[in-house]
Image 1 (cartoon, rainbow, N blue to C red):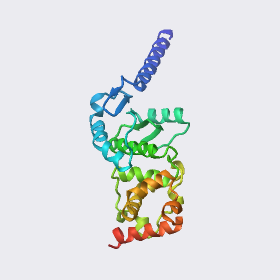
Image 2 (image 1 turned 180 degrees about the horizontal axis):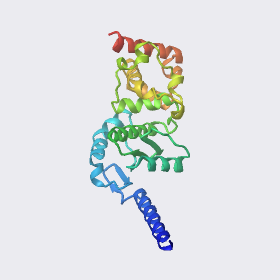
Image 3 (image 1 turned 60 degrees about the vertical axis):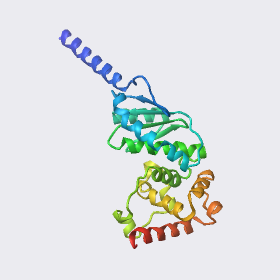
Image 4 (image 1 turned 135 degrees about the vertical axis):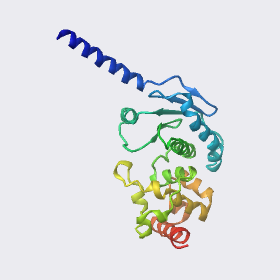
Length: 243
C-alpha cells in the first residue's frame, strides 16, 4: 500500500510540473516593431503569420490615426484558454470570459492563440495606437474605443445579417457603452458601420478629434447623443437596409 501511495504522489507531482511547464514562456521573439512572449508550448513558427499581419498593417494604422511613431510593443500569447483567463484575472483583477485579447499597458497587449488570432492581434494593436492619441481613451467611451479598432481591422458585419438592425431595433450609444461582462457585445457587430458613418460624413480628422476628447459629440459635431444616433440609423438604412 505504501508503495502505491508513493507512486500516486510521484504521478501527481509530475502532472504538476507538466502543467507548470506549459504556462512558462519561452525566450522572447523579437521582430522590428514587436516582441513576442509565448506560453503553453507556442514557438517562433506559430507566430509567423501574426507577425506578418501586424507588420503589414502597422504603417497604415498609425497613419490613419495620425501617430508619428510607436514604442516597441510586447505581445504575450497563450495557447491554453484557461491559462489565458487565469493570468488575466491574476494580473488585472477581472475575468473577461469569451474575450480573446486585452490591453495590459500602453506598450503591451495579450491574446489567445486560436483561429481568430490574426484579427485579435491587429485589433489590439489598433487600441494601442488609439492610446497614443489619447491615453485616457481605453473604454472611455467604449463605443468609440471598439469602433475605431473594428474599423481599422476591417471587422465589417453587414447590418442585413443582424435581425435587430433589420427590424429597426437599433442599439443606443448607452447600450454600446455597457461593460463587456454585462453587455450583449453588439458593439462588435455594429462598430465598423458606426465608425464608417463618422468617416463618411465628417472625415478621419473628426475621428481623431473624437478620440482626443473622449467621444464628445457636442464638442466635435455639435450634436446630442440622440441626434447622432438618428443620423447613424438613417445612414445604415440608406446604405445597407434600404439602398
